[in-house]
Image 1: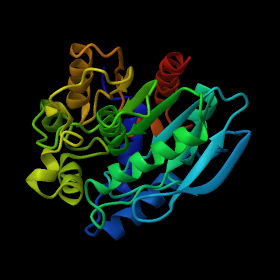
Image 2: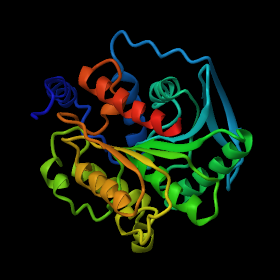
Image 3: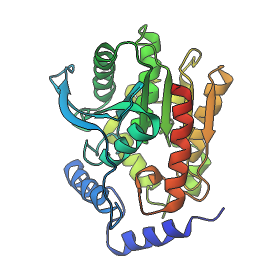
Image 4: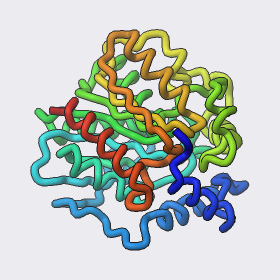
Length: 306
């Protein structure tokens, strides 16, 4: 398919307005820019989805309390730890608030969104350590419910790494994982990086900069929780829904990780996004094709949790 015309127009508007590229020199400037862009990219008439309960709280972390936001729909039969995207450098509870509301309602699960520590101040493995601490706390607070991890982009990479870590550390047991356009290859060697690396919202240069902030040493970049395509053993991981986007620099590595999971005997539903770009999951109310695909992805995730 060609690039969805709604995204073609949107990228043109963002470029003309000077809103792209995402990276703005320093981490602090990039964070501020991303936050403003995230709030602005909601539709003109955007109204947050209603959720029965939304509560801000904290959970114990390895270096102090970690902020979380807990979304509880009615009914809620499962619980999901959600890890936001943003290149491990950007993003917070507010940038992904609409996404978490949609996940909670569509899946019928309490969603616990984690505000993990960010690079470069806190490079790998700090965000994984935060997610591990939060996962154990969530499991303890919601006993008896199916427990899952989910994330988009860098958050999907963290969710996949967390699933590996939880398996290797003996639990908590996970019922499912939702990986929305995950980053799985720090070498950035796949063809989609070249094919989609310019003019498609997220650029190859953005990703290279993000990796330098998050995993600046060979040891960090080579950790299987970061370099997921070299993880020696994926057997025993929870069933997965992997969502990719046709015009995403990360398309091929996301598809490759889905195939690696399948080859290891993990049940996988891989849903590609024809005509869509990286970040489509968060363009709520602005691109109909993105809205439709996001709902299909969440329906598949809900099926796993039921």
